[in-house]
Length: 413
Image (cartoon, rainbow, N blue to C red; front, top):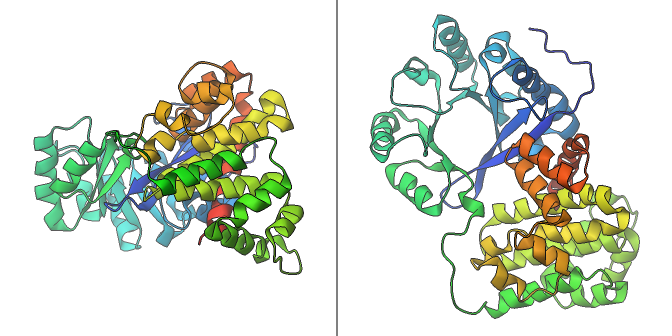
């Protein structure tokens, strides 16, 4: 198989976090397709896999895609036997074998050689039917689908594989209850949508600290806010002031001299840049532990801003940034979105979109959600409703990944 790719076609890529019991990210599975309509294991998927291992890694950078955590990269049979894994940096990657791969002698030999060479392997969608058991001696990770297996099967898999030192990953985890059940069985890693779906809603009032952070968030995202007002808002929060100054003084900007005031930082970088960054940090102040949810909010914000400009021009980007940034506040605050919105003086159309009402803004948000879940057809359909060319979506996601990585890298307290 020729892994060289000359044609410049868009590669659809997304990432899904694999979480530790603490809620911290252990690694990211990179999800990809060559085209929005490509599904399953096909020539297009093989091509996309090679593209992820070449163009995507080179253009975005693996460390940017994964924030220096492990990358779980899917391999089809063709990519495995063709040696595509040689393009993956060994310490940073886990090679995930597709469940459709038949464990014949050719595949077993390839996995044995990878194991000897120090590569880390994972078995995807492992089932207790014995089909993949011949590959178990070479696998460090085994992923088990929570929706296609029974509790008894998952328990049996754990009792058999944990003594062998295999790390179990519960995938397609939809609720916190499922995550807790898997953890009790010995599955120390989990993957799915549970981290961005609330389980229960508290009835009490929001704590003062969270209310203060929400008001800060609302003030920063007032489209008519002035430089003087942003300066005053940021200066009232010592942690926020420190983050702004630390990030603008980083070598990444090459300003040439240190900046000692918030106002100077705003002038150097521009109101929109500072407002966006400060809004993200205000959101982190609202959050009390779900760091990956804040990361996802950042990605959505930048992605919505990027494609939102396609809808209404450059002046509308700030509103769409707010849309994406606030889209997970119900999860972060463990409150219904309707309750959260009572504390946020957002524009009516943004509020409607966050409530799930159909409008252009909601179509933009649905595009972002579908893309992050690697639902390329859903992303293209939602983008069409908003009048956004599907061809812009890969670029939007790449921009969002770069930006969120930059903020995390240069502005962590």
